[in-house]
Image (cartoon, rainbow, N blue to C red; front, side, top):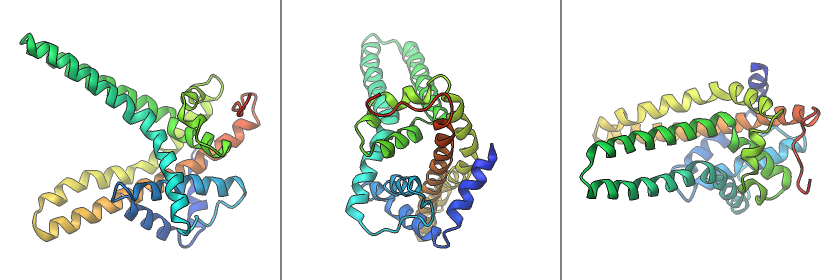
Length: 243
C-alpha cells in the first residue's frame, strides 16, 4: 500500500525545482485571492499526469487560467466541507434562539455537543472517503467542473467495489498530513511570543503550513491517480460522463 506513497514522492522529487512550485503555492495561499492560484496547481498537474508528464511540476506561467482552475477545485471542498457547516450553523442558531427564549441552558449544551459531534463525524467521513480527491479526478477526467460539483463524487467515493480502492489511497496518503499538522500546532505559540520575532516566526510557520498542505495535496492526487488507473482495469470502473 505504501508503495503508492513512495512512488508519488519519487515523482515529485524527480523535479529538482519542486520546492519552488510548492513554496510559491504556499505563498499565494497566504491570501484569500491567491489561494485559487495554489489550488490550481493540483488539477493542472493532474492533467499533465494523465498525459504522461507527471514531472516536472507545472511552472507558474498562466496565472489567470490557473486561478480559474483553482477556484473550481476549491469549490469542491466548499461543497462537501463548508456548505454542510453553514447549514448546520444556521440550524443550530435557530434552535439556540428557541432554547434561549425558554431559558433552557441544559438543552443548549446538548445542542452544542450534537453540533460539534455531528460536524466532526461528517468531516471525518468526508476525509476518509477522499471525496475531494475523487471530485478532482472527476473534474480533470470530464474536462469540466459540472459533475464534480454535484453529489456524484460522494456517491463514487462510497460506491460498492470502488470504495476499497479509494480507501487504500486515503490510508496511503495519511503520512503526508503529519507535517501540516505539526506546523499548525506550532503557529499559535509562535504568535504568542509577541513582538516582531513572534510575528515573523508566525508568518513563516503559516507559509510552511500552506506549503506542506499543498505538497500533501499534490502527492495525494498522484496516489489517487494510480489507484484510479487500477480501478479502471477492474470490474468496477468509474462511470463516465453520459453513462
